[in-house]
Image 1 (spheres, rainbow, N blue to C red):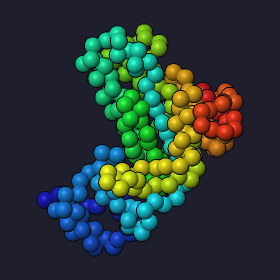
Image 2: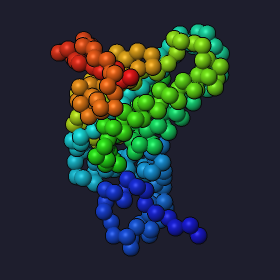
Image 3: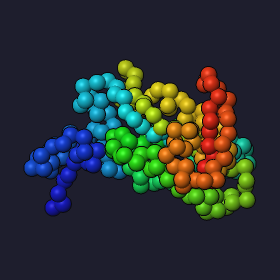
Image 4: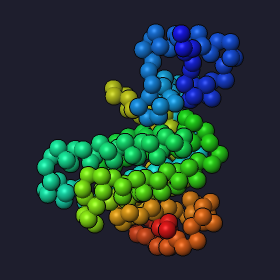
Length: 240
């Protein structure tokens, strides 16, 4: 019989002795703890209870946030049948999840035609900024291939805009009656606005992100952005 083991997230955070790893995982399974939809190497225990394990409702964590959104999706809904539009959305979710998971990020939310991904929690990685950028590059490439797969390669108004920012976020459960495990704070808000400023096929990052990846993107374009809800202009960089 195949050995039952704890998920990677639990193993890395709980630091349990190897001797109890298998038996405890069996108990997890007995009590209905399953594989997480956020990441295949995590479980539902990781999603909802890390904040409780650390005895805080929310904890500050250095995190990189990625927002990705399908551009032209609303207009496209008026041009093609609903079944093909639904296929496009599900394939986009699949491509985005694969790009994020491959680099130890988690897909925290699907919001209509947009995705929120978190890097560096609960799987802690020193290179989380680089991982987020690599995931974004892969996602842009995959989405171009996706358009060709479903016969929309010539539709230039359809594509993905991505925003990435890094900094301290609060991770944990929010809400009372309907609890939700997510990241909150100014970093998340700025990333969302940055994604809104990115054009079709663009990856827009903040100065903090660019400082860490600039050697890989010598042709990046700097833009000074005025973003809704952000008091001061923001320097954004389109990675090329």
